[in-house]
Length: 475
Image (tube, rainbow, N blue to C red; front, side, top):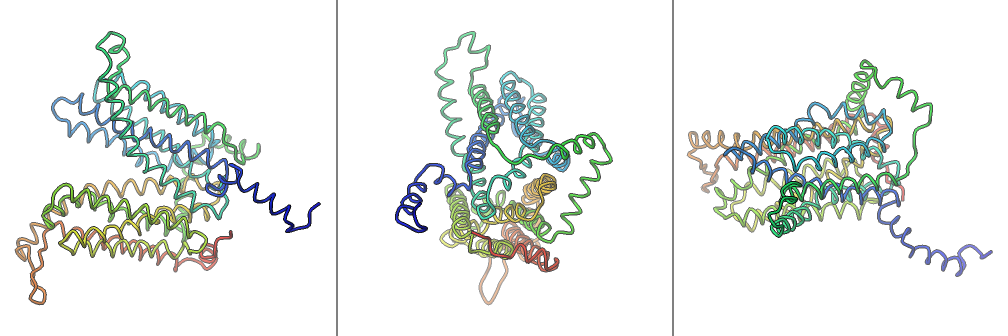
């Protein structure tokens, strides 16, 4: 046998490091998570493609009120999050998570295979509701599985890859939708084409259904530690006990309330999403009224935001073993809010664009670090409920942000006009203060406040929790 550290041993290690499995482990943490990530990429592409096709179908079958039809369909995608998310967490914690994910993937595939034949707005709304309900089961099951197949020191990278899979597939899905639209134009107007609905939306729905079947096939080949027979029997005995279900719901919310790290993540992400979500409807108004720019300028701001987020996520992944997640998480919220405050105070694009990039750079790691903190500090039996609760909070806050931002902007605009004439003097300098700028300042303050609340939650918690979160990750 070669002596430790001998040239033969070093050569063997070097050869092993070049094997595909070793490279995958170094990037993804494990071969099992790599398979899960591929499944997420396919699933996310299908989700975006399906959303594009559903919006297109809603516009086509609406009776002259396309905006209302699209709004109703999108509301059906949001509604299950309010009513089913926490209950979905209980189901995920009680049942076999792989079976839950397989059921949801096959169920979504069947719905998409049926959608080409839907010709009424009610049918489309119902299908959207069912799709979102299945997604509300699939998502917490997936999040609960991640710590079981990824080493602790790789969780930050895993969550960064999850973000890339979830949101990076939108342009890919848009490109596929465009290709399918072109393909549908090439079909002759024959009976079988009309019978099977091989039009623009129909082709997208069929491809989407196949994508979920492919996801199910991959999920079925992933292996992770399963619960013992005794644990499974215990869960089954209580699975139809309504009182037990409510007790489990209460346990999940009580854990959020008493665990300072989980509480900080929920407060930080949910409150921060309100402020950040307001930027979406306010951005175009801000460009038009304050910068006096064009649509291309708003696209440039969105590009800066997306680029900043991508760099921020990449930075969090590269320095995951050197950063203190429990401290950086609230600090990132404060930096994002401060950057938005400066951007909202500027009136020229050359200042707004870099500051929005700073906002993205700080906002990108917030999601990654928050989910990593939950993965590290929530036990397996509670994980489904905790992630489901976070999802419903975030969805609720997104809806609040999108709904109140335009209204708040108009109200503040009228108030500013009546009090200051939309202009105030500061040190001999006239500052233009339309309602949209005031609303941007408020959204920035909300994000900073979210960081402050998260920081307070961490400091107010017991030393044991904080010490665990603030300890350096082992590499």
